[in-house]
Length: 304
Image (cartoon, rainbow, N blue to C red; front, side, top):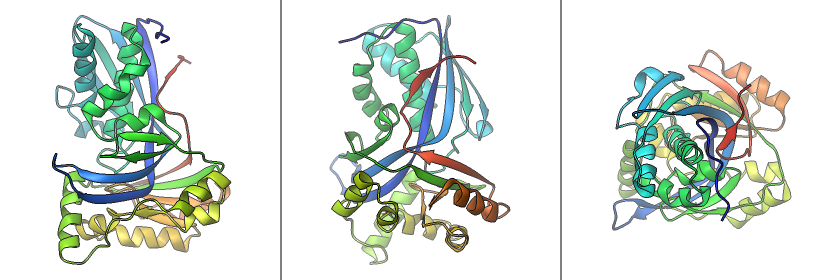
């Protein structure tokens, strides 16, 4: 196995994700839902700076910084402790996190930051990247994917990943809300709605979705996007429905809630169409971001 170069100061960039398919199955014996996800990494990215220090510390700036803890409750902090325990050392790192991924927005921002912290600490301590996936799965179901990036099928509780071919560049618009939705609340609401017959039964990612990705068939892909958590998100926050409708009316090929919400995602035919959709949505949500995917997973970047 190759080893990671040891550094004293490192900066890691890590992407958000959108689900092209989020299939939610029944609750397992361990309390998690059985999932079948098609993840796509997108170019809304957080930056994490890490330096060797005498103690563990974390500062946060940017998107939603005031909402996040800077101590042991934060996944960055927890990731450093998990990897340090695995390699038998103290987690003596000073972190500075610059946020662009929305907090509690259904784009796995906290999981992305945990993945960034694992990679940063591995680089500081000379730990091989190959050990990080197992540590990522300890931290959360969505943490392994930001390490991988690209497009992948996630099964189990989402942590068992298989890279998928994608022959098309995906142009996205993301509409951020001025409120959050707890992932736990969304899953509970979906369970309630299914018991009441108000939400569809789970389904695996269709073969034609995977074929559309591999063939670069954008229209075919747009017609097959699915998020089982969307009915629950709309039930919890009906304000999302008009946002989805406005994006469709503005010309988006497809619109869906991202993950557990409340971020809304709009797949567009071109960068120009994405710009037009973002302009139409402006004013009806807290902020919009134009992005592309798939992009690479967590990576060490040089200072500029």
